Length: 461
Figure 1: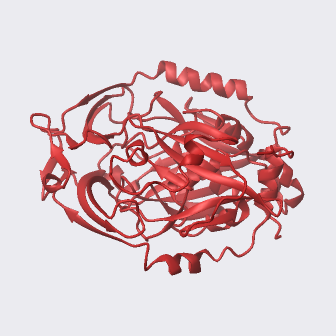
Figure 2: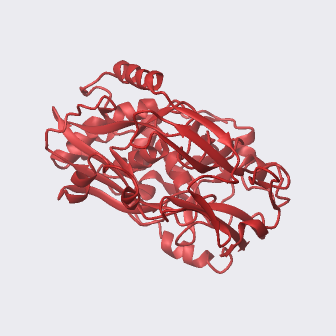
Figure 3: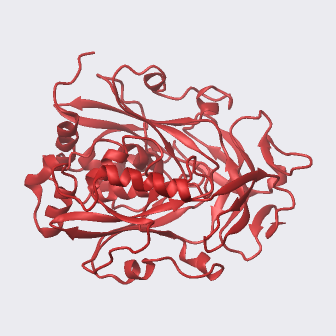
């Protein structure tokens, strides 16, 4: 293959500028008869292919693959709750989340898949070209081969290839390989469609449409914001575009940000220990599921699935079902004409390296009926009249049942310079630099980076 001659950032910017009707709704509707899914709840003790381990009570697949549901004991001195125990998904396999890209008429396009997952609240979603666990792509499920997988197993022209974490509150040290691979002409199979980055950006405002796995991969692409400077239309968008420009000033240098993250990780006294699911304090096995005694937080439930258009036609599995809709928000402010993002260095028990950069606000408000205090900046986010982005997006539907969060970007002029050492102001370009590496930016913040980029004004091709 011949290598591209243009700068990757310019190619991303050019693709962002190419918008226009993607006709995604009609495409998805046309697939609905053949690409369908039925999900019904089932008792955790009666899931075909799954076993309750004698003694531990842990849930495991009979092959020993896929994942297990076990418990985690957490000590985090100084936290609002300094000690707790909870169920956790342990999935040590590193899956592939991959998007193929190619130039069509000189414009970079992404090959996106229409995909059902059992936890999706509204059916088919726009997903990566490949979204597969190691057990899936090595054939443990005894299903059909994963389309386009060969381009990621033996890639020839890699654009990005980074391991990234997932939800540290529900997964124990879960990582996936986030990949973008460039190809020349490949067949567009049924259920797949080439879309520009501008078209995908326009779809970000549609609830529950662009899935979590697509968001995390796309967020890792070089942003191209500086190349869009000519498109800035007002003070906010001008500050946003400057935020993506490496030449713009920032409150903290990137070296200072890296040192800050290392400092927080070094001085956070987090201790976690995996253990048995059986006899977990404060968690009850009731009506075939595991739930917290307060009715809050989340439950572990079982489902049976039948599907058309998937590699496997039927299966059963445990899933995490959260209580309530979360609020995931960036509080942003123009400082010296450059938009800055108020960022939280957040510790979660399932992270591979203690702490990752997180949104200003990341919580499920309903859970705070059972917790001391209230999340910092939540009220400011919820009462602001300067909301720039506000869309409910669903989380990973392969492990979470009906998990949805309200993703928000909220502008402020208030003097909210943080006195808490776990908060710092970052620019969008600094996020993009950190996203070139593993385990710096958590999955919720990666989604918000993509939401923020979708606000950069675009021309129409």
